[in-house]
Length: 106
Image (cartoon, rainbow, N blue to C red):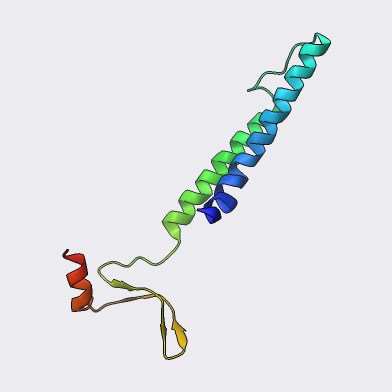
């Protein structure tokens, strides 16, 4: 969850939060001086934040659709520690062992 917050949510929402904070400050300042407060949806900052959010969403969709290996009918074998070394995760064409079948049938 922390990784999601740092890598996805923070870059996506931090510029928006900064813009909202600036807008709030500018509106308070305009009220004190008797000027017209800036509108929320007008200006290049709002447009650039909107475009940035759309590009971030698009990049996540493209990454999800194009990245990784498609398992098909193969079985995923998780990483494990065997004989003093780490075996990387991979897909096998063989069906899972009987122990795994028993676990899935519960």
